[in-house]
Amino acid sequence: MLKIFKSGCIVSREFRRTVVQKRSFLSEAYRCEEAWKARLQSPLLQKYDPENLFLTLNHKYAYVGKVSAVDIDIFANSVVEKNQVDELMILLQKLRQSAETTSTLDSTHHAVIRYLLDHNCTKELMRILHNRLDFGIFPDYLCYNILMDTYIKQKDYASAAKVAVLPMLQEDYMNPITNALSLYACHMYLNNPDTWQKPLKLEDDSKEEIKVRVRFLRNPYFDDHFDLTDPYDLVGKTLAFQGKAMNDTLGRTCQLRGLLLYKKYQNASKLVSQWLKVVKEDTVYDEIFNLIEKDNENMYGKEAPDKLKELMLKVNTLKEKNSCKDSLIEALKNNVKSAVDKQHDVDIKEQLQLYSEWDEKRHLVLDNQLKEINRQTRIENIEKMKKDLKEQERVLTFFENEEQIELEIEKKEALEKAELERVMRMPRGPMKLQKLKQQDEYVPPQIIKRKN
Image (cartoon, rainbow, N blue to C red):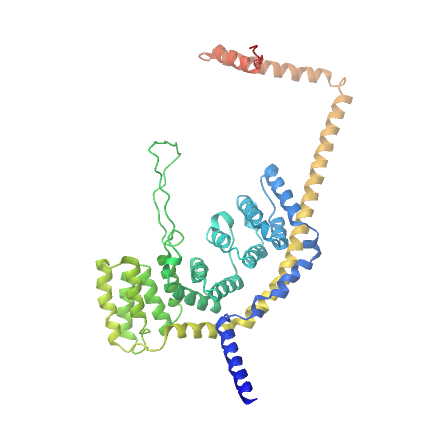
């Protein structure tokens, strides 16, 4: 009996250990699943069928040239089935191509991201998030954190790093959980950087020369921010950006590694010089030196640039100082846990409040849109009535104003005659008039079936 009890304890410990290893940083409560799913009970969202709504909006864009932002929001929040991913992406592009894109609701961004994440559409999600010009989707803090936490749990560190660079591009470091998860995701991705490759440039192999007339030529410009495409540059700038906001050993470590990945050797040299003068102990984590050497090998192989070699001589002087011997990965994990303990309940409370505010705003915007449509309809009806009354007045007063009408006709005929004489006096004027007359009198040829 005692043996069974002991073996049961062992199994229990092993099971508990397994669960802990698979557990993510964020709790299930952080995702606010119940509150998010409760939106589907809204009478407004239940009123529309996503398939019929897509056909209506697609038809409207084809004839009017624009779609309403609140209509796209209703579709994004009501769509559930996975087979409508392409339809959602089509509508997002159509919205982005119209002036209504400036009125995109905050709930639209959130709904699109959660819909694609729930259906494991990682490829489509990364395409949308990194193509802001065509889709115009920008995550909020909860989406940032849920996305990175999900991909970290799945050990898809490349996707987690792709999400981590987005706050850096927006220069946003206001949420502690987002900052901590970004650092962790980038460091974990760098353990296997081949999972995220730089996009290949498509080269035209055709020998045919094509000349295109353009109004003006743009000078080549690289903004060193939104134009970045190399994963090392993006991840490096993210580490440097997030590390700069932290005034501790972990922040300096991330900043140093990030600047080297980002190839900002001069900035890194200034920082190292400053740390050697100011920081007395625990300048950086001791592990970072081996990681930097590994990064340099992955980027350059054995032929590193001269500037990097000079900088590494200076970086190696940090080894002589009292560097921190603790585990870097444990420090990153503790940084995430500390941020979660601090911000977890605050984020949940704010998000639950936002869900109710989004529902109210959707109703308000839709009501205002319907009022505007009714107002425009009334204006068109009034203009039509005024036009009809004017025509009726002209018919009823024709005999009273007959002489005035004839004078107006004579004036128009005189103007037409004067214009005709002006054209006839122009070089080759009669020939041009003859061509115009022939175009007006054009009769398509009759097709006759030949007899064999």
